[in-house]
Amino acid sequence: MRYHAHLSLYLLTLVSLTAIAWAYHTTIDVSVQAHGIVRPEGDVVRIISDVSGRITHVRTREGATVHAGDTLIQLDTRDLRLKHRMIQSKIHATETRLEQFRQTMADSADIEHRSHSADTFQESASRRILEMAVDSANARFAQTDRLYKEGLASRQSFDDALAAMDRATVELSKWTPDTAGLRKAQVELRARNRDIEVDSLRAEVTNLYQQLEQNQLEMARRTITSPLDGRITSFASLHAGEVLTAGLAIATLIPEPHPLIIESWIPAHDRHWVREGQLVRVRRDDLAFDAYVQSIGADVRITESMAAYRIVLTPAPFSPDLTLGSTFELHFITYKERLLWVMSHRARNRS
Image (cartoon, rainbow, N blue to C red; front, top):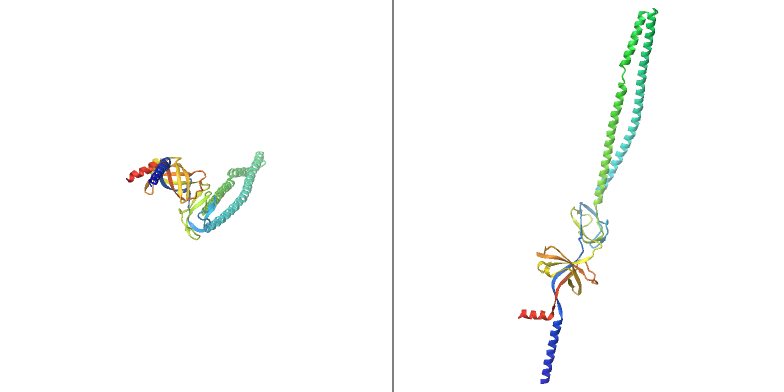
């Protein structure tokens, strides 16, 4: 009986010593706990409508993968298409009018040039006739004067020849090219007026083309497209027939490719326990893997009424694939402690 009692005591002592030795050599992780969520690395893109209009088609949904230029929402463009046709009609009419006016100008310029040439020729002929009349009167007077001096012509004949010469000279001196000059001035004035009319029509055509370009831009703005390749993580509840207002946030887009990271916020009083490259145990239900601190925010921020620092984690190699939006329990390993000291510390605290 005594033998069995001693044996039990020895066994109990052996077990106790073994447990103490195991607790001494076994270490456990002392950690700071926090929660994390899977987010894309970098900023997401918010798509905001800058125009208002009635929705005719919604061509995407939340979770869809889109490419740059893909149509997300199509707004009604019937009023702009009608305006487009009206402007095109005005452009055609104005350009036709301008072409006809140019043709009329060319014909008028040709006619006026011929008329001016004819007037110039007529004035030249008229002066030449007057000059010939002066020459003839001078010759007649010279002949009559010679005959009068020889006594072969009467005084009356002499006076008539002198008067005829004086009249011819006076008529020549009164001749001026005013008619041709006036017509030339009139032609130049009409040409300037036509140039002004052409410039006005050209300005009207230019303005119409500017209106057409602006209208096309307005039509393009009513087709809301994706600015880049990516995946839509949130999309407003919109349907055909509804009115979209300017400034409304339509969707949130994650650019592709988008490496996923785990984001966490550590209270400011625990910041000194966290450093870049630190090991972090990541757990959720039956899933567990390791990650490392990639970066620590430089500035403290207020989140959920708490001063905290933003921590970005990168999963260790061969970790399972992350799913956007997943949440985890995080354990930032600050140091390792012997299990024996932890147990004794807790025992002292209880006592």
